Image (cartoon, rainbow, N blue to C red; front, top):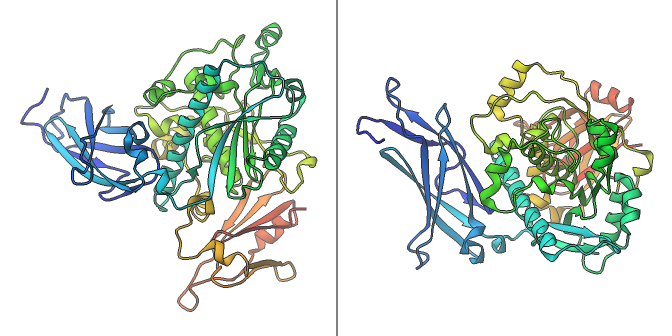
Length: 512
C-alpha cells in the first residue's frame, strides 16, 4: 500500500552511475532507507526496469526484475543481459536502470560491454568430458548439462567481478571464451572410475594440451566436468555410513581440483544446479532433502539441494582461483568460506555454523611442471563459535577474497591487468631472483616493480605471511625487498616464496 506519508531513500551499495559492466550477469545490492523511523512502510518489494538508451537503439528493450526487501531494508537484484539481444551488440551499450519502491523512483545509467567487445585474449574455456566407451547420453541430457555449466560459469564470472570491486579493484573478472564444448577423452569409463583425483587431473590435462582443438592455446585456461562420474548409493546405504568421507569413497570418476591451466570437476552434483537464470535463487534456497541412496551429497552436512549447490559452486570459484595462482587462506573463498556463496545472492540469511575445513597434503607425484594445487577435505569440527560466525557473515557473507588474493587476481593477465604496466612487453626483460644469503627478493627489468610476496606452506600452499612492498617519497617503485625474520625462518621450515610483480609476472622460490 502506497502512502504519501512514506518518506524513503533508495541507496545502491555496489553500483555507481556511469559504471562499466563487462560480464553478463550483474548483482545489484542496495538498501531502502526509512527517513521516518517511527513509520514503517508496508511495501515489501522493489522493482527494477532496465532499458536501452533510446538514442542508441531504435527498438525499445526492457528487462524487469523484482526483489523482496529484507527486514533491515536490504535488497539484491540479479540481471542477465545475455538473455536479450545485448550480447549481439559489439560495442558499449548505454543502459538506463530505473528503481521504484513505494512512492519513490531512482535512476542510474551504466555502460554494458558485450563479450565480443573484450580486447583481452586470455580467456577461460569450459569443457564437458566424455569417455571413449561411455554409453551415449541422450543429446538433451548433454545439452542440459552444458547449459548448466554455461549459466553457472557466468555466475562465477559475476562473483569474481563483485568481490574484486568490493576489494577496491573495480569490476575485474575473467572472460569466457565460448560456450561449453564436448571433449572426447581417449580413456574408458572403467579407467576413469579407477583413478584418483590427481591422476584424473594429470591425464585430462595432458589430453587437452595434446588435442588438435585445444593444444597450443597458451592464452586459454580450462574448467572441465567429467561426464561419467558415478555414485554407488546402494553401497552407501548398505554400510549405513552417510558421512562425507564414505560418500566420497563411493563416488567414482570425481574430482574437485584446480591448478596450472585446468580446474577439474565431476558432474555428479549438477543435479542441484539451475539450468535457467530464473531458477538461480530457488536453487540456492532449496531445502529439499537429498536421498543419499540415490544421489551424493557435498553440502558440508546441510543435506539439502541448496546446500549442495552452494558448496559445489563455491568449489568451482575456489578451484578456478588456483588456476589464477591463488594459494590457500584460512578464511574467505580460498579457505573456510567456500561453502557460503549462497549468501552473496540471498537476503535474510540465518547464521550458518558449518564444520571447518582442513587442507589435505598433496601427493609427492604431483611435483611436476603441471602440478595441481592441494584440495580441501572436511573434518566435522567447529572451531569458530556461533557468535564469531554471526558477526563474520553479517559483515561480508563469509564469501570474499582476502586482500592478498585480491591483489594477485587484479594483476593477473586473465583479468585484463589494466595497470599502466604491459605484461606482454615486460615479460622478456624481467628477471626475478632470490638472494638466499641476504634473504632478498630482487627484480631486474624495465617497469616491473614488486607488488606482493607470499610465504606459503609446501605441504598445502596455505599462506602463512604476505607482504606488500611499500613505496616512499624517495622511491615510488620497489625492486628489492628484504624478507622479515619470520619469513626467513618459515622458509627453513617447509615453506616457499610466491612473488608477484606489478605487471603480473609471478615466480616461486624454495619449493623443494
